[in-house]
Length: 186
Image 1 (cartoon, rainbow, N blue to C red):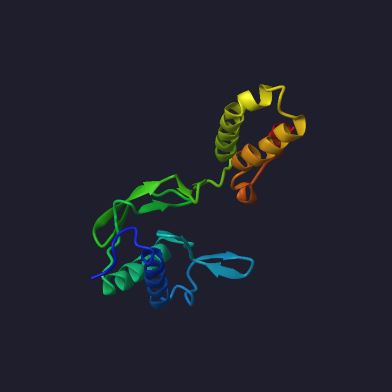
Image 2: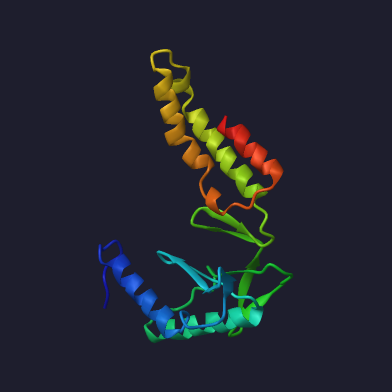
């Protein structure tokens, strides 16, 4: 009937099932999605987190229905309480098969905040705040006269910068944010 939670096979079996569902749903061949460098992207997956993307509400409903249908065939059910809908345009409510889905203006994906308007300034502030907290945790190390400066610098580079710059590869930055990043690195 399956494997126990925590079993080493559990993530592998889940990933096999998820891949099977996505292939059967036809997401690889689908023309629905967003175009990035002439490639069609309609889903992002990591572990048990799946993000579906489409250009329109109708396309997204179609994708979601296909995934829901194929999931049911292997005994999996879409958790509507955990399902969130985000649109770059106005959207007040969203239903699929008569079930209401929560409409959000932002969500966390792999530790980074994604916003409907694409504004990264709040995410940058959040990361810098976390970086400052990481710096504060190094307070006694940085104040110690017994620890060489080179070691202090290595610790900051290893323990503060990765926290503050997490997800920076996907940030869309303006001049003001660029200056803040440079100031933080000093």
